[in-house]
Picture (cartoon, rainbow, N blue to C red):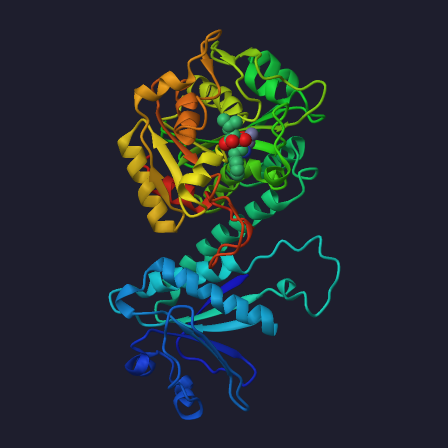
Length: 494
Ligand code: BES
Ligand code: ZN
Ligand code: ZN
């Protein structure tokens, strides 16, 4: 969607659609709206029944005047940026239903919230919710309302120069977040390990990005025994993508993000049952968020050095599959007993983080993964689990979550949990005991492959994939992580 900043003085045409946002205290607010052209609303429309409750909506079609969409924002002193994103998504649902391709947004004046924050909240909510994965819908039926997206949104505001900059950035971030959703929603036959590696290579067209893809024989030479083991049952070879954006060549500092890229998780020999398997094409959501976070960083020309390390493969069931009870040797030489072939994410991440720390030597490693069903049990689809060996890094990730609405909550990583992953026959086992502390056990396993770099692990089993739409986040892939990472990159000093 094109986002355009316009000065407050203009002429709305009669077939335009204007959007105004009103809080519960809207009586006096209507006079505060910066555009005199809308004075007709007071005369023509009866707003007495409009309460201004959050997500309340009123569509007013008018003859010889622009059409009006009015959206409630709730109590004025409770209006946050996240509330603005949520309420902006209501505009999109009205426009989709009524096939309105272009909207004229009048920014509300909100006490104690800067105009540019109001602008960015609304613009982000609009562009992120203006999304549908509809490429496999062949009918162009009138009822297929999801196909009609808003093409353009104009924002009337005072600070137009600064607003144009903000909108450009939001366009880049939202477009990439939406592309990230596409990659995750795609069939796993299409978003397969080789195709995703090829996509990463294409990102090198953007200035500052370089990419190296390691194929199966390279991975064998690197001795990544865990990534090789997990990939054994698949017809696709494993891939390891190292995508770099060098935005600050003068600095030696760098941050690495490592994303779980299981393009389909059948569970392998420990095959998943029917109800748990259908959505497992989303098991590369961590990988997708890393890829697109790097793309955004480069397009925004952030002065930061960022590396994405992405192990990609399928976890399939075949006569070549790796087996529970067997032992494989990781990149760092540790021998790992496979307690369950469905705990595959931690295996490929173990090889990837050990390689990242040893060879790429970043200042921080943040891995992101759809790692455990236990995370979904604990936090539902609302908040991601965060585990870290470094308080400063954990705090920055927490603050990024609060700023973007991609929330995290920290769980402990006490050394005492290590007893759960002891193996009788090898150095470590990839499963714990029973179902206890599942998310912590997953993180504790990965921790064993970190030496002394500042590291954090984000479990997005719940937040990356929604069973229903919520506000500006759609059903299925949410693109969780792209905006969280961009905020974190900005925060990190390098
Ligand atoms: N990809 C799954 C985790 C998952 C579950 C993601 C539900 C999204 C929704 C992961 O590979 C897995 O299967 N984990 C097992 C680990 C267990 C065998 C120790 C799990 O959580 O059940
Ligand atoms: Zn699994
Ligand atoms: Zn998995």
